[in-house]
Image (cartoon, rainbow, N blue to C red; front, side, top):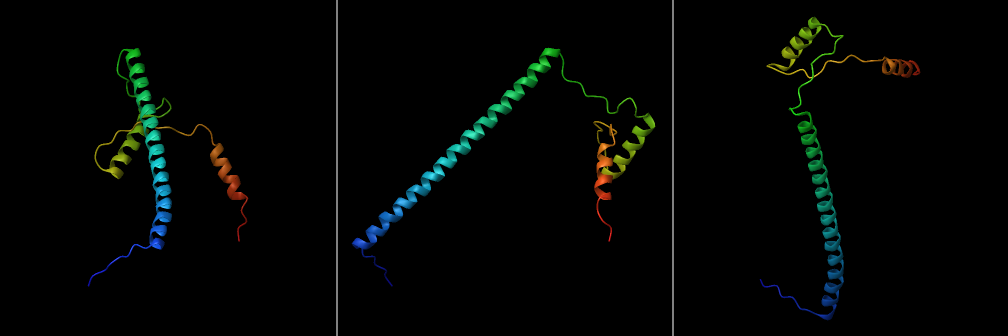
Length: 122
């Protein structure tokens, strides 16, 4: 079975009409690709500037940044040991505790209490 195509004036006109739409479609894709590339380059520039800023801050102090203490002064060593043991049991293996903080105020708790109190119980 052979399929033959006859190029008539009508088919050429339809092709030219669709060519206009295809050209517009690919032009939009090209512009979107260029916008994506520009935003990616700007993002890389910001990341590089931030890295340079960190390097300058590290060299200005003359030494590498040191790790902060894992707990504040109001946390007792017994509490730190209990938290470390609980993390070790839950997570398995060794882990580093970066900070242990207690909430400074109870505003969030009070807000939740007022919110829950505003609901009607059925």
